[in-house]
Length: 178
Image (cartoon, rainbow, N blue to C red; front, side):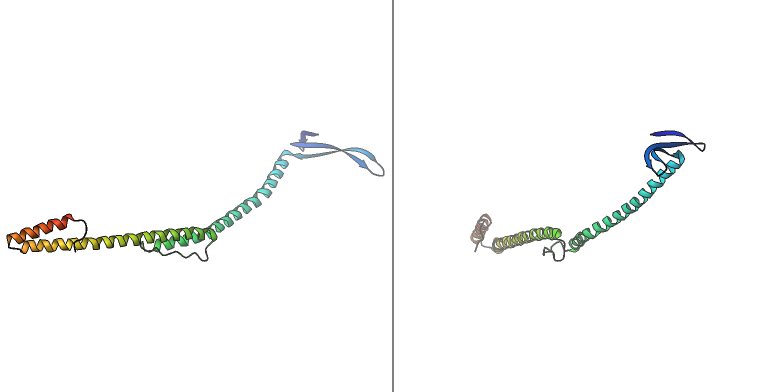
């Protein structure tokens, strides 16, 4: 049974517990009453709380520090990859090294390397197309220029008319003139 009463002029909380007692000279039930002032009880509760909270707070700070270190260590390879990509020439599509990196990062870099390989092949094909196109255009442009110079230099009217006709024929044909 719990009850409140005064103890040395202060409010206090008491508990009454009946117990069986056996001794040579006495055997039977005894009542034990224990009491504590509310101020002492609050001080004890605060002390118990501080005894529990302080170690938990220190453990929490230590766990946060360890987690921060673990994350920094795990992210460091990503920083190295980002630095490597930032320092690369925009035309450099060579594969990035994957040795010594965590498996997850190796998978990502291998995919990136395959993509850069496809991109490099596309750029090579585009360069070849542009080169072939430029070569294909040089031949008719050169023929048109020759005919234009001939037309310019020709003093004879029938020859001039024939050169003008060849010039119009060359410029209207889509395939190169040989």
